[in-house]
Amino acid sequence: MPDLPTLPPIAGEPISVLLLAGGETAQVVETVAAWKSHLDTLSRAYEILYVDDAGENRVDALGAALAPLSANVRVLRDCGQRGIGAALRVGLAAAHHPLLFYTECDPRYRPDDLKLLLDEIDKVHLATGCRAATPAPFGLRLLGSCYRAFIRVLFGVPLDPLPGWLGWKNQGYRSLVRMIFGVRLSDVACPFRLCRRSVFERMPIQANGPFAHVEMLAKANFLACLMTEAPLKHHPPPGDDLVGPAQTAKAAWAEAFRVFKRPDFGTVVSPAEKKLEGSVPESPTA
Image (cartoon, rainbow, N blue to C red; front, side, top):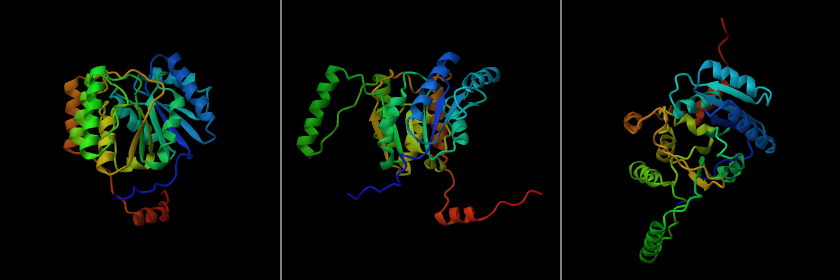
């Protein structure tokens, strides 16, 4: 097998943290404060972008409540209550730093787990969490052990067991994503990810809803990006990740079909063109 490419080290670079719409104002302030306290310990530049799809009055109130925390905290509004994918686009457009992390603004997703992804990001383009605390049912664990032993004896290939059990619906979703898009990760809808922000030049987010989590992985896989996952220590229970609050299952699959009927992979720019663009001064304003 050819060696994997060596990527430029990035784990120590400044980071943009996107926190996607949370609950009540008090919970949002508490969660953002927890992330700020953790990021202060990393000895690097950072920014926290809280993205909410609520009305203008709530966003203004959140901005006022979060203002005392730090100048590094900004509140962004996703107009139209379109969903997770739309909120990610808003956050990506506003982010400045070379590392981009996103998660839900929910106290169940803990800042301490960010280190698990930072430990991996130098080797990959994208590192995602895996909600791994719940074990699979005993019968499935036994069946999986027999299958892994059979493959090991027949082909000499060791297989890893599932890191955690996500429920029948999410496990079926994972299997379907693997068959259609070739994504071999265990928790394809986990909203706890760290990326090199540059990868989004070639994989703009088209989905408005929670299918954006899978769209990101499928496009990265198609572009031969390196990916890995790390089991989260603090385990939020997996919900119905395919269907967001504003979507039905039918609408979610319709969005998936729309995205991959006409996928957008951005604009390919050669290194020479990037260098040329960087050397051309802006036109003076008339």
